[in-house]
Length: 260
Ligand code: NAD
Image (cartoon, rainbow, N blue to C red):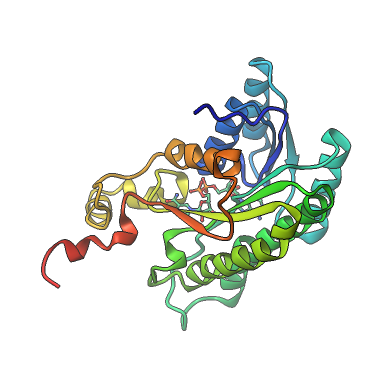
């Protein structure tokens, strides 16, 4: 089966780094037009656009902080102007925040994670759905995490944001289904990007992490990106309202391989 997304108009938030960048490139390879959203490092977004265009495919970059509703609105207006709308939204932008127990955390830090990971996702999904429901087609893929179901000490805002994203996905999927629009989530495990560099860059941290992964290796952004392309394509036309885990088995709780 060959997956093609020819002429589909895709937006990837936080598309100039890590998993988002891999998804943007993979969507482009499948034939989609790709809009790369960024909030920092415009030069990287621009370089990605140039590389995609050099291969004869369409790409643009759009600056917007997803936690700012007016910037999100402008980003979608820019998409309307450039391509007349959107077919695929990859809600990928996210941060894990400052590590601190709940009673120690600064409220501003906690709220920032929620504002980007959960509310920012909603701002983008809302704008996309206004368009997709009208045209009676489209797919939204939210980037959740294994931490939508696994607690993570020191990161209560992150886990809360991803758990919230799970229910946001289910509810928006139910609302949008009668219009032929699918909403689903993809939950990576440990994937090698800058977000978790301090863990995999450190021998003890890496060994500890590997113990939590049955496949006993960290995932590559491309492994998430390939699944993302499948999920937004017609190969997954009967899949909606669910989170798909791409985690090397992390949510299979490898400690139960012994004892228990
Ligand atoms: P990353 O740090 O490489 O990428 C995050 C991207 O989000 C960056 O481009 C960043 O600029 C962007 N971003 C942050 N705040 C933004 C804002 N306000 N507006 C717009 N963009 C913003 O990290 P990554 O690992 O590629 O993370 C991508 C997504 O995957 C995140 O949602 C993260 O929670 C999720 N995730 C990652 C892992 C992992 O192991 N790497 C695991 C589970 C889930």
